[in-house]
Length: 473
Image (cartoon, one colour):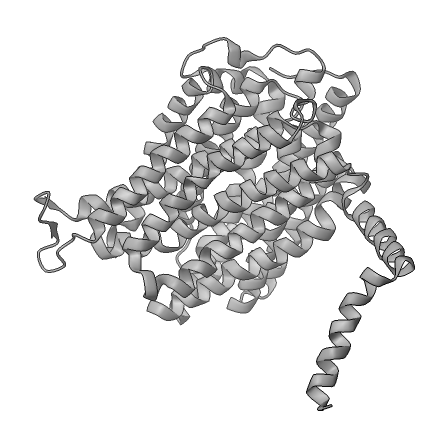
């Protein structure tokens, strides 16, 4: 027998061995249970099904969201121009505010599952339509002859549509999880959610990177639109295959009133936020962390653009996003649930800003592009896989109105407002790269000090809420 066939046969028999040996099968099953318990605690089979479906939902949402983020700038530059990107970012912040208010109005009238259908259906039609219109653009005249309008309007619609879709659908996804999961179950299952979202973060940019030359912008938009239509189908599977008793949150178990049954006004999310110090603290943490990360991120992009341009920059940035996603998958698999269960929410809440301070100090001491790259990867990974799960869990001991209306304000308006604050702060600092980094580092460390104080305070409040079985809202 040729050596190659011998090795193939040996490998085939080795793979079949577990199915013939009951002892070996039992040992492998026992080992698997030990690994599962180490990673996710005592996750019941029904909980596993629940979080696997939610994981599939998260992966689908992130593929479409990050896929759009990857090529929307290219479409905007092609139709509008590079010089207008800064203006587009500012306008997108203004557009998202009324959309969040509309979202807060809708969640008081419809079930959370229906909101998925409304968001996905609306934006799916938008992206498929954009794809069709993009194929009609006349590059020579910069118009859409069939509609007799300038093509730059399509660029603005594309950019704002992509930005608002990502903000609304991701915020609603995490709000939905918080509304259908108890605190203890979340500690066990959020690791799976984080792994799934990071897989989506990786597959979205990777898919775009490898298919852009084959599909072009037209078919990519249509593909993302069709992918968005899969979201309500997965939600339907979730409600069908997961028992109702596992689709409840702390407020439902403790008999708290469900505000979604009572229609309310557009500004109720903002009113609820300002009414409770606990919620103000959560919003403050989100804003503080986003300001710090955005200041470092903007400097990183400027530094990278000095060494790379055009296609080389796109490939470099794609490798950056992929590295974050891959590291996020690893940490989400072995670290998120373990840290939450072993160290506890309050300890992790305070530990995260201290980690950010250490990262900033290291970048300041050695400000090379490679160090910036590594620092941003670690910072983003910890943000996605440690900080975000903690803050999502801290929304669990709240009413449904808080989980949806307040959370949408925090995830959309606070985060985008923080990016704007970071940009303005950098514009006030010296333009020299070394002095700019020094000024931004000192400012960021000040924000982090404030973040540690806020984290310690609301961490203590969170423990009191859980101990006293109290619901905010």
